[in-house]
Length: 173
Length: 232
Image (tube, each protein chain N blue to C red):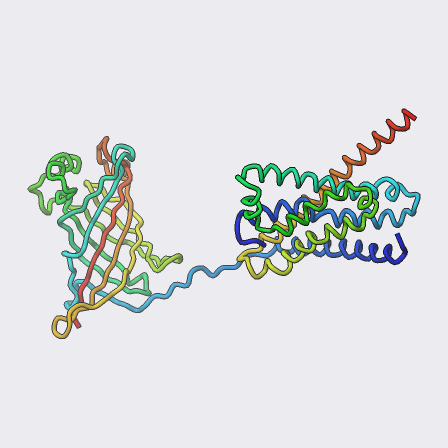
């Protein structure tokens, strides 16, 4: 866990937007595996997962542009970041809009595993040494839960949109 | 997706779910943990003082003080002052035994000193119901007499309940007595051990003691310092 307030805010934003994806992906992957190739989850849900991840990446880009706008120069903004590597890694998630990556959901899961791993590390490795009380694991879990909720919501939103598009296309055909 | 990739992905998915389950489980157990504190570590010595029974112990009035402070006109300023004439009738102190602690002290109210002679000899005397010529008259003497003492559990001090007599009224107040430490002065024949004590308390001058004033606040803060010197 970061030692500064700015670092902690960054950490919350990154984990909220990206850590919950891996669990949502895992649950849906197992369900789809049980359903088989013709199942609803396999045909309708799994293809949407990378798009959901890319949507979060887009939101993250928007947040960064909004925050970066308040800095005088791009260099100032970059220098102010506590986790430039993680920021760069998170910004890459927007590439899952590209069909080549979108058709490989496992890549989005691997991309998200970095953030999931950091969450696990923070809860099990760092917290007991750094804190005088036990509030940190609870806070981490709230962030993780919020992230899962965001992905479920985003997935439902994309599913609704895809169903609408599918219906419109079918009616126009 | 190739069968091998599927297997790896499947294993990764199962592992993720298991790890997430452990995260939630461990976090839930954290909620049930209670922080246990034994409070601050308070160590008290074995100092015993008996004034005036111990003839080697003297009260150093010159380096003592009885000060007061209160808000002026609802807090526009803070009025402060002291009393020039005060003394200690008895002072018994046993550092680690609350039952061995008791004291009685007095102040001549008309000796109030705010560094404004016009006020000290004028309106304050009227407010207190005294005159500058008074000495030991009942109306001019404020007395603080301890009733019970408890060892503080949060610091090295002592919580003292006292009867406070002022302006013809006696009420119980609670204050904090602190033993501020000791040092030595002089050498050889002039060697003395010096002990410092302080006692802070508050009282409601208008509500409890019948003081009538539109200038000062009801709550008065009193800070007392006492020095004792002991020859070997």
